[in-house]
Amino acid sequence: MDRHESNEQTQGTGRRALLGAAVLGAGGAVLGLPGAARATESRSKGQGGGLKSLPVPTIIGHRGASGYRPEHTFGSYQLALDMGADIVEAGDLVPTKDGHLVCRHEPEIGGTTDVADHPEFASRRTTKVLDGVSTTGWFTEDFTLAELKTLRAVERIPANRPHNNLYNGRWEIPTFEEVLKWQDEQTRRRGKQVWIYPETKHPTYFRRLGLGLEERVAKLLRKYGKDKRNSPVILQSFEPGSIQRLNKLVDNPLVVLLSSAGTRPWDFVEAGDPRTVAGLITPKGLREIAGYAQGIGPTLDLVIAKKADGSLDAPTTLVADAHKVGLILHPYTLRNENPFLPKEFRKGTDADAYGDAFGAFRAYFATGIDGVFTDNADTGLLAREDFVNG
Image 1 (cartoon, rainbow, N blue to C red):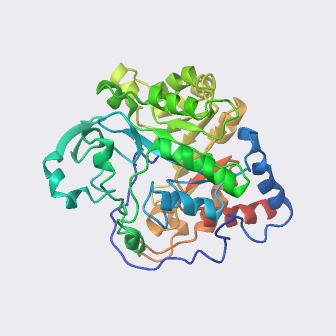
Image 2 (image 1 turned 30 degrees about the vertical axis):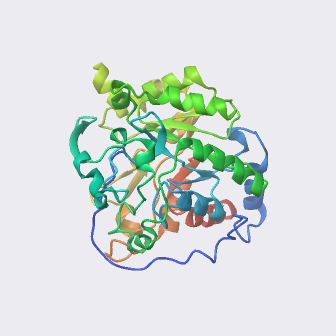
Image 3 (image 1 turned 90 degrees about the horizontal axis):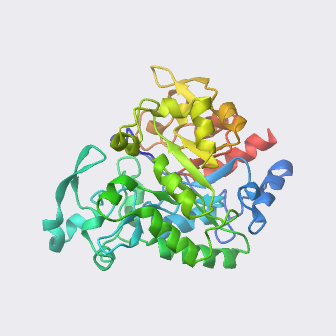
């Protein structure tokens, strides 16, 4: 998720909000949900009910609870469940040299693991062109799974989340197969269906390397009986072609991710398709997407545009247009820290200080979105309670 994230390296110091007041650790239940919110929560408890069994708006733990733990680790995934997230985005899928799928935000792992501290891998550092962008670092496709398992995860944006550095080195890189097993284990332990939301990352790039993602994803889903229409696994990609390929391989719910309006999906670039995201979010484009997917995952700016000063403008027609053709919307990504919030919800200037995240959640919920990706599932759940009972 988040193909083009900004402001991540902004410097600053501050504090981290306490987690315990809002959640019950083992049960993952949010305290004190009265009336309508309780009813909304209860809809997620049915086994095998498909997308309609999820609460609305759905709170999706973005790479787990990445506001509090290094992303795409079982520590992050587990905390998101403990907080009560309806779905855990586990994970962004990239392949190893020997064809295994692992969970990393990007194939370049210099920023999310301690690989730079491993002298035995120093020679693996290289520069590649990834979707048209020259990128230097270490890449998962140059490592076997056994080699990757010797690495440990670290915080990706320490300037914004210095407290997460406490957990650097604690967790290894999970495989997608491990995630599927963990999902089953957690579902049994909690007596409630656990949902996951994996993404195929840079599928055209990897297909050119002979490491096609979709077939590997489908094979594992079939192995664990999670390739059905009502299976608790939603698949997503920034490349519409990847979703179309998955649509032929599995029956899972599918979501097309959409970056900023002027960008082009990389498979479009490779195929010479001139369309941009702006074309995909027209009524015609959305009807086309609805022919092979169940939803879209737009960047938040496609839901509510921003003014030149970074404050929110009027909502666009995207929610109504998508709903008209039967598509759900799960935009990304709401975060608590100042740099990631619209201007009017920031408090002070510290890059790691929290702004008025509740106000931001309220503004986006009011557009009628069906759910949202957030690094702070506990904040999202309380914001939903406020919204549903408001």
